[in-house]
Length: 114
Length: 116
Image 1: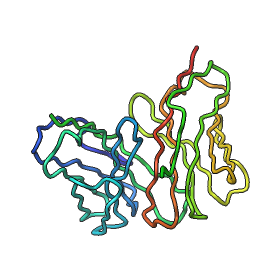
Image 2: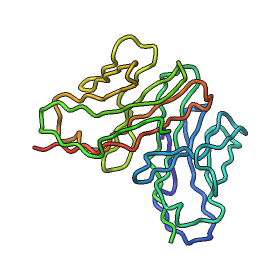
Image 3: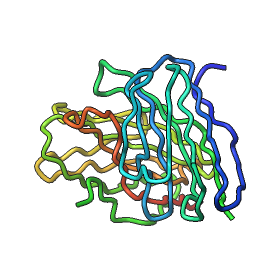
Image 4: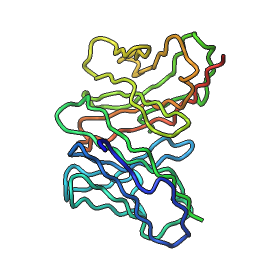
């Protein structure tokens, strides 16, 4: 399927466990992003990647790790989950070349840390 | 300082009426883009409309238009002829060229409810 997909869509985990959220896009977009959505904060950038093997921190990176060995995949890992990381996580992608390019969002992953 | 401010947590509009959702932004970058996204209860983010900082005319996309007032740093979304399906969260967002990250800065959103 063309587009951007995330898995799992829902996840419940316990405090202290490692969790990896997957993101896959089929457009070969250069840029990929991870945002978290919390009530009262809108969406905030966790990490982004400008190309394979190039990643950088966003606004709220603490407690998260990313990698991008292939252009199409951008997994997000919570190394030791905390309750404050309960959130909805969105992956997004966009391409260079036009400032007007919209970001395409995945369907989101709802993560609950108990 | 907040880069995007949406001061209306919730708005109500009668079906078939027009509604304006407010958005103000803060940037010193002369090159930036402003976006509006819709998030229905199903959760996905749907792109609605884009306005570039150098665009002379206000952007329009079907029933959506963006009232861009550069001097006031506002980028309000106008939805004409509201429909029940317009009930959703609406987010204003900005991309700045000088950051190089191409990420979006989002406001906190406005929940629009369309009343039959």
